[in-house]
Every structure is written in C-alpha cells, then in structure tokens.
Length: 205
Image (cartoon, rainbow, N blue to C red; front, top):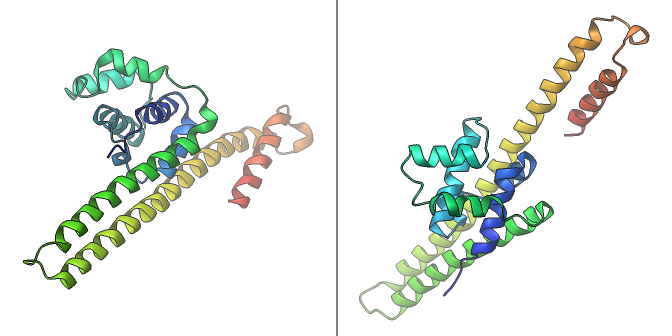
C-alpha cells in the first residue's frame, strides 16, 4: 500500500525554506514532521524545524550546513537533492492544500496499520477479542487526539510568534512617534499609521 507523495512533500519543504509566512502556516497545520513519509524529506523537515525553533535563518546554505554538521546530509539525499527540493516550488499559494494532503496521507497510513493489527488479532484464538478491540480503540483514539492536539498547539505557537512580531514593530514605531509628543509635529506619518494598524490587528486576534 502506497501512502507517500514525494512531490507534494517537496512542494511543502520548498515553501518552508523560501517563505517565513508559508513556514508558519505549515507548522500550524502539520501535527509533526512525521507526516513526511519519504525519509530524506523527513530529515530535511527536522532540520527546518530545528533551525526555526532556534530562531536561525532558513535557506539552502544554512540547511546544508546544519545537515553536514549533524552528519545527516546523506540521509537528506545529498546537496544535489536538497537543492532540487529548494527550487521545486511551483506555487506557494497551495501550501495549505499540500499540508492537508500530507496529514490525510499520514492518517490513512496509520489507520491502515491499525486495521492490519485488528485483522491479525481477529483470526487468532490465542488473543482475547475484547482486550484486542479495546487496544485497537485506544490506538485509534490516541492517533486522532495526538493529531488534533498537536495541530492546536502549533496554531497557538504560530499565533504567539505572529503577535510578538506585531508587538516588536509597534514598539519601534511608538518610540519614533512618541518623540514628537504630538501627531501634528510628527515627521514620520507612516509610522503613526503603522502603529494604529498593529494595534487594530492585535485587538482582532
């Protein structure tokens, strides 16, 4: 049974490498990097996540350096494959659709193996069928709960990061604006507008 979609995985990874906004959206939707089922893509995704969590810049050069330092560059397919992934993006506007395809494929794969376990247990006289059904039920519940909970946690994290970004911009704008003590004397009118925009955005969050 084939659950991998290498092309979609490459599209998501490329968008995450190239654009900060798309990377945040991907982390918001994906429950974990385990949804990448092609091993070399999963290795790249883990490197992207590590650099993102550390607040480090993410691009082809920094990723290659990180993977080399960790002796994982070969597991990531090598520099040539990494470069191929980096340049493979066709349309960043499809990041949400592509991420949801990966989550769906991941859940199908996990469900398939749970079903295989259920089938194997149902044909064995050595297994208590009620205990076996309870085990399968627990596996299914855990799979669904972990996917939903992790996605919600990622959303909250992305929201905090976005909020911090707005606050930092607003703070710098306010410091500039407050020096004039009065709006009519401000020589940076666009800063006042930016501060108002930031404030309105945070009130709407």
